[in-house]
Amino acid sequence: MTTTRQRPTPANTEREQADNGATTGYEAELWQMADALRGSMDAAEYKHVVLGLIFLKYISDAFEEAYIRLAAESSQGADPEDPDEYRAESIFWVPVEARWSRLREQARQPTIGQVVDAAMAGIERDNPALKDVLPKDYARPILDKQRLGQLIDLVSNITVGDAEARAKDVLGRVYEYFLSQFASAEGKRGGEFYTPRSVVKLLVEMLEPYQGRVYDPCCGSSGMFVQSVEFIEAHTSSSTRADISIYGQESNYTTWRLAKMNLAIRGIEGQIAHGDSFHNDRHPDLKADFILANPPFNISDWGGERLQDDQRWQYGAPPKGNANFAWVQHIVHHLAPTGAAGFVLANGSMSSNQSREGDIRKSLLEADLVDCMVALPGQLFYSTQIPACLWFLSRNRRNGKYRDRRDEILFIDARKLGWMVDRTHRDFAPEDIARIARAYHAWRGEESAGTYEDVPGFCQSASLEEVRKHGYVLTPGRYVGAEVQEDDGQPFAEKMQRLTAQWQEQQAEAVRLDAAIDANLEQLGFGGR
Image (cartoon, rainbow, N blue to C red; front, side, top):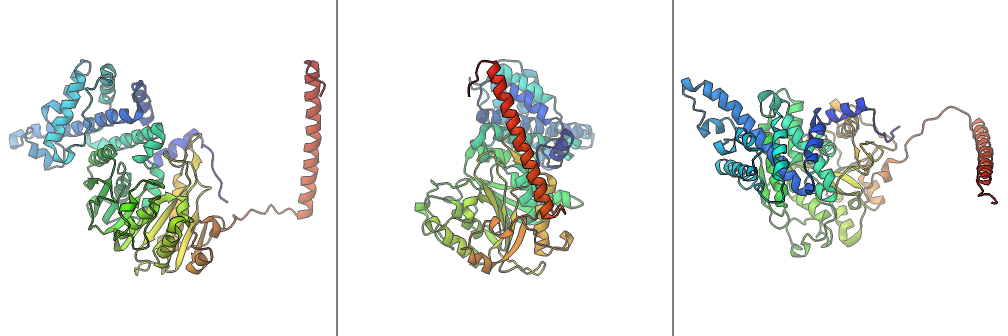
């Protein structure tokens, strides 16, 4: 029996957040201190101030560690002031004006804004991979220089660049925690750059992108790629991140910068392009082995009227007023012959028949592309309260490795899973993610996941013919049925007698309470009902 969990105990909360990678112990405290320095600055602006400084601290720490080592090896010919020494080890070269020690020394000076801007410019000048990525507006008048200095002091106290810290991904976790907090603070706008970690982890755990080309056409701050690399490293004996090639595109320029920084922090190389994936596809010839995405929901101003005859619309021209099925077909277009995709869409995509959406969905099903549908609980996303679902597509549903599931679709109803982090946000616990992923892998025939069985109220394997009878509607609730209720073993007659007596007692108690309230009101001079 599945139920919606309320907030766990503090111990469990800490454990589950640690398992999800949401915190390493001090991010929350660090966030509170940094947020206190924000003053009246809008969170959308402030995030670039904070994240830029954390990024600079990270690469400066890594540089200083290598600098000390090279200086010690100078008698053997090593030169600590040779940029190529660092580039050979995939460490960013940090020029003198950008080294953190200089920023720390100047933190209390009124010119600290110019000092930081010069540091960012120097980093970009000497590291082409970061060109036009870093924020360079710390000198603007709206940014309180005293608070900027205090923020530099705060960041100075974090050791994020040494080898041990990098091995634990301390900086990456701090950075991601801050991304999530800024997304929460910004509300709807925050969803443009951040997909909740547990949703990303669920997509990755189901697709298992061990090797090949991984693509996200609306990559936000690159969370899908970070999780893909973490998945590989968590499931192999050594780092094999070189086994995947990363391709992404992001239309929002400031979000694209966050994506580049997010990957650079972790030493992940990727081809992340800036531009509109519909009108300026920067990876036109890419055929990806895995596609993971969280496209913006129900976008009406996507310019569809200019793309009615586009080659990507193999299953029907998407409506001009909604981009949902444009995203679906863009994803299908970029799938390799044996590729698989998992992505988030609004629930309407599962049942809408407006503007030919039903016809496109039918064509996708008849082409045997739809593998699995997952209904998600509400309140998972910072950006919207619109109910969402996960689509999983596959180009080759019988590849010789797994069970032949052609003309079948797995439906999973996860709406009752998860726990409330606070009044407005829900999250998946690790066991929720494991349960959903295990059902999918078992259904596909992976031996390690065990034998698949339909579970009323949770999962059901339905034939394409059954889906046809439902008018090609893909809402899991139509197929999984009702959850089995546990039988308490009490005979029906006895149960009715007990419940009737209980109801009569409650009615009598209600009468007694009404009389008591009336008497109290009478004493206060408000009687006479």
